[in-house]
Image (cartoon, rainbow, N blue to C red; front, side, top):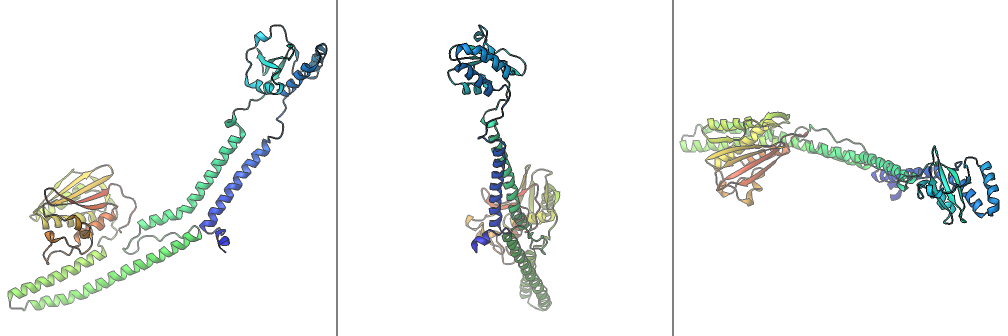
Length: 444
């Protein structure tokens, strides 16, 4: 059963096995075709006037008696006129121009060491060749210019290997692309997955059987998660709405408390309950509903935040370039920096917003001169509903530990990073690092 399932072409294992088999068959077909075209067990093409005929004629003359050679030369010249065989003239050896020419390699190999051959000055498409017989007699002939076969790397076998490698490589790349494309789409869909209304597209259900099953399971999981988040938000919205009414009634009733001290404390508690409900609901709903990315002057946004707090009497300043363009969600960025500045002025006497811009990233620092946060608590305070340590504990009527969590969620939705650093001599630096150019993302 396992073997049969492995051979199923709908699965990844079957497709990989088919890829291997097809690649091997293709390689064998190419090699076989070239083998039949260039069979090494068959003699090469015979060219008239080639080294085979000339070597046979020279060997015949070399074994014949000297008295019979003139007659043999005449017969050979009549039988093979293209060779133009003749007895070499005196001094022909001194006219030799090359004894190791590639065209003579075949002739040397056929004649053996007892014969010497060399080129003479010639013309046309044939070469004048001189051959010294074993007894010293010399004959001349015309050797046709056979096509010279290049070295091994220029031969048909190397071309066959290169063609086979290129073909199999292209086939493998295509198959790998076809098998991994669904996985790449999974990664993209996971990056774009949104908990805000299920705005992200479902995972594509294509490819091998295992990939399709995985896509279906992930799509069902996505639907369940989205349903759970929607149900949670609806329940919390209903609770917030239902609790708002009794809180309002309690506020009205508290107005009839004659003791001013008790009345003010009761009203403060009710205001804190209302603020807590609104903050929790705002965090769980994540209030930024997939705002579209736009090219924004982030320097102007940071200057606006500093001016708003300065107008309210807080010591907040901006240090950075006048303009810095980046693709962001402007309202979300404004909200994130506002939350950080609120924390800075709450725990310190002043706040500084710094901006450093480069070609690829923006670095935004929000600094305060407060007591800072210990290293052991820096990871914890980034979690929802977690307040700082004793040095930065807020009064019970102030905040609920959501400012840093919301700011961090916004930064992560931009594909950036948020880190807490120590400031010298004391204080805290909240550093935001954002990419200037955004990939296609959804709020996470």
